[in-house]
Length: 315
Image (tube, rainbow, N blue to C red; front, top):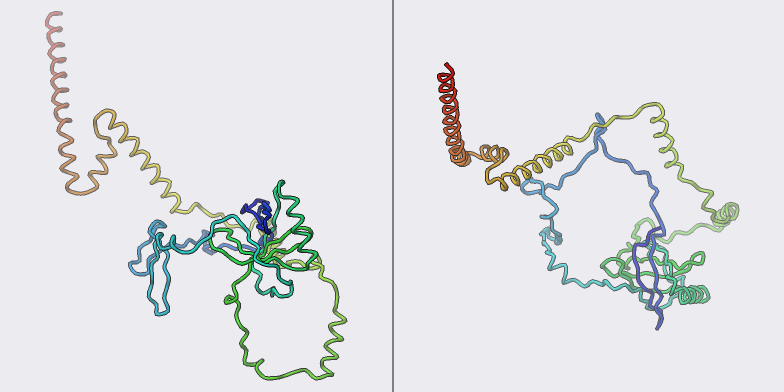
């Protein structure tokens, strides 16, 4: 495992250096959206809803939509003014009874591993939590925003579990349960008998994700039978490579032209493609060439005259 955060647990006057590791991982089957005809992946573009143009990441800002539908754009300066905590500290606020923390509040789980120098205070905190049968209510800022969390012990390791805020838990408001309705004594007795017959211990290995296994088997069968789609390279990616090579070639041509004091062929091509002003520039650039042509013609004439003179002497 790879640590995603380093900090320290503040336990009274004692600091326990720790590293944070994700305690869970997602094994859900991941599908990709593809074009049924050729298997090409579906891509999404960031398009402005007003002008319909694609927007680069550099021009994307954060916006908050008000209740009346108006959009408030927040700048980087606005976000910097918000209260954030970047301290590398897990601050213990209090120790609370375990039964007071509703499991519905649990969000994400992390393992805490002590540094070599913090092994003894880590063990002290772990044993104290187990003996007291309480959870440590803490505040922590894993990235930038402060959140509530609890520390508890699982299999000899301290686990940090972030908590949802109280207003993030919905109240169950169901009209069908508003009336006072209860089971009869006979119904309750039979239900209790059923509960007793199905009672047992939770063994995680007794259960498996048969859907994921079925998908894996289905894919393997299709591959073995040759039922796969050869996906050609995306046109957009190929164009991007060609554009990159063209840009590099223009850069090389410009560098050579700068050394020789002339203009490159690629510059002439790009100038001619830009419109009428470019034609004037091109016309100016061709004047030295005409002069060079005249010089070459003179040299050719001189050579021809020299040959004729040599022929007369020989005769």
